[in-house]
Length: 354
Ligand code: PLP
Ligand code: COI
Image (cartoon, rainbow, N blue to C red):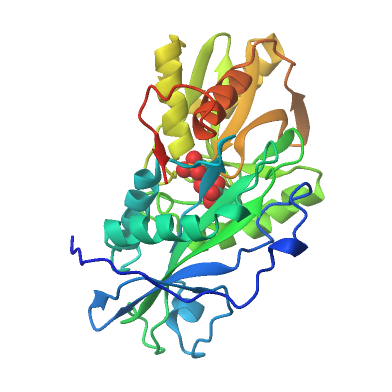
């Protein structure tokens, strides 16, 4: 992969919006910091990233993002500890996954040092925006889209890579109620489900709205072939605990290979928790819910962290999950957030100081 000497130009914003932000009442992803990284792909290569004031972008109506949806993104967070030090969690995994998504969507890969160096430079500039309120963090959204023009249905010749920050609170405000979906599919074999492609999310909005109208927060997607096996949720990988065993669906080209998922599997291994990465049938879940062996279900993702599921619905029947003492969800949430906020030893080498 190409690397160039990095000299990241910074154009400072004339004023800061930080005084207008109530850091004690942050929602998710709707307040943005003063600056952003912008990096353009032109004439066959990525230009050196720059930091500029956060601002709207002007695009030609024929820009290919509007017509053919060449758009990919990542979700990460930065954390501040009691000493005002800034930490990232497994950031290279996000960079690598962005480039996996790029390849699948015929988008040019971003050089890893452009990603990492511009991210670190922006974090240093925006360090006062990293919340220290418990449960809050700075959500980081790196993304690439086709800015090149033309109605021809082929990859664009120009792209923009942007990193924007949003100081954010929790993604879900309480326990999550999910609906197991058996009509619509999120992804299919050979498709783009494993990529963090914008269209994967657009395609979920309509079925998710139908579920929200029925009182659920999220859909759990099942395999597109039989709709018999659960795969993942809209913005989270899904874990199930039956008796003491932790289950999760194996990754495939239909499922996003979540970094939180990967971290949970490592922690489970180090804690001696029995784990099975295998197909989980809806019928198995229902049987376990009925006979009492289904102890917990939770979703895992950067935005959602670990979100316990209170109820799952299937074919108009709701199955409530019990309150399990010493839950795995609580254990994993504590282990992961203690590493993220620099409150505990990081035995896995996941934390990176900025
Ligand atoms: N699955 C989907 C569809 C997601 O959007 C996300 C969120 O990024 C995840 C799983 C969890 O991935 P990660 O833990 O890397 O954030
Ligand atoms: C994340 O967890 O970072 C995600 O990308 C989920 C997002 C769709 C809000």
